[in-house]
Length: 397
View 1: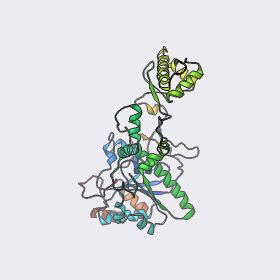
View 2: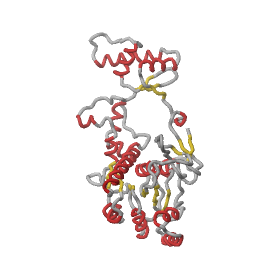
View 3: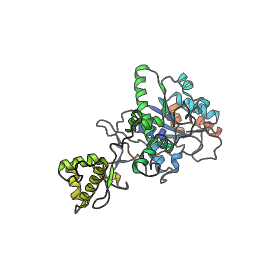
View 4: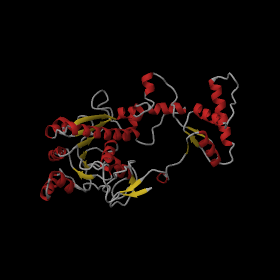
């Protein structure tokens, strides 16, 4: 389902200024959340393209992934490796409520953009730093993308053991999006606290910590248990094709038996493994005995079992997920899930082109006129819309 943004939208968080120095997914996703909620998010990019621009179909100069992470933001291009570029970023940070970054730990300090330096002139600033393993500890210097966190968190090995197969990575950057969501939540909390104290703070967010804190099986590591994942779905053969039931065998059996749909084939006194094997086969035979899939689904609903068809996702926007067409855009982007009763959330601008808002954003935030913009461009601190051959650029996570 695609919807257009209403002209009279009433965002819940108007007036906040967010300087987004991040790229790829985790940091930009946090910025997209804040932008959709009403913040003015200015994305600052360097000489190289954002990694997100390498994935997805390209339209209007941006890839599908870049559009999803950055719709609604304003976009400027600054070379932070040049002193004038770093000075410009410091000036913008001095006017920001929030700064989001995912440089490797220590890079911002070397640029003079660390929290202590920025807070000295803007004590209300909330700085969100996202890195793979946090800014301190043995993993602080490691390069960490989402697959690294998927592996280090224990998720991939647990999934492989549950399926009895070799480990493989997830087909989505789950660690990135979880870090982005937790980052946005932390920013909201810090801004709420700032309203009472008048001061901001530095949020040091580890992707690994975000991943583990979001894992409803992490308690097993603390308790030293290795129980099967309690809410893991199971795949069954059924009329019309495979079907998922969102329940482990013992719960599926209990619900079907209570409903009177099936008779226990296990002899009295059978061992647990024998009972499990016989009951699993009994459920499978029962499901395949139905003449049609709709008839089976009626019985599963009556028994209280949650089920799902296995789909490829092509029609997901016809089944409840939402897309949105930003103002002036020629393509849809995935919508955030927020639907307020007294507010409207979503991108207020199209997917920004590279350097599109150099003059506009710098005029709004810093009051720079056309002559100042031209001087910064001539110096190489402010970059044009087309990519140039990059020199040394700051290293990110």
